[in-house]
Length: 252
Image (cartoon, rainbow, N blue to C red; front, side, top):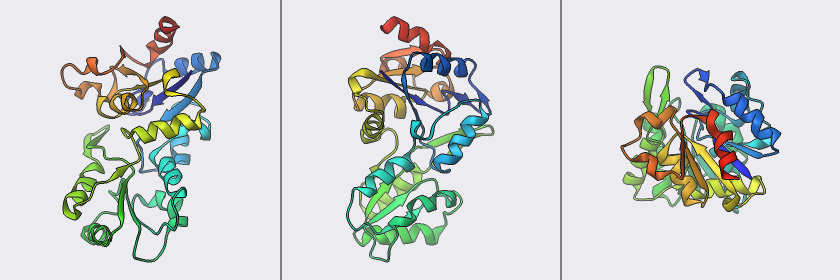
């Protein structure tokens, strides 16, 4: 069995690990469970996410972490003659430097761009799309949570470019079914024998179901913002990640 675990809101919330999360990971590893750690974080490269997880007390191997950056690299590597224009976080650009090239661009990649976004950057992306480039989004989240509250996410930029250029983005992060399929392939696992655990009905649960996985919704993180009846969208609902080993015992 492979267990795909969301990070923010599932393993940690705010500045603290969810109580019992470390014990749950230890219990899963004792069972020789194949683990993959999923996040839509695209403001930092995977190596920075690994450092953050270590700070919470979670020991995660590089090949266990799956982010939109990893998924986008895999997508672009499979395409011929890519000439990429990026509107992403500065710390992420180096991951896509090998796909750079002169206009006309074949693809425009949009991600967390809070540090790079201004009218000129937005307009350059728009003009590349009008010139025939395809729009690829690392993710299209509506908002993300921080200790000081909610903040607008990259989905607003993606939606604006779709509207202005009359195109539709290929999304490589959650809830794209392709994201989960690529993650399962990296784990040498099948959807039928795997589960995804997360706090967000619109990404973790919807994406997992679209990819054919069993889904577990935790009542932490973004669960507080879920609409009435959201529990019915998941196959299973637990109070927190600490209850996952018990649920897996029941599913045997």
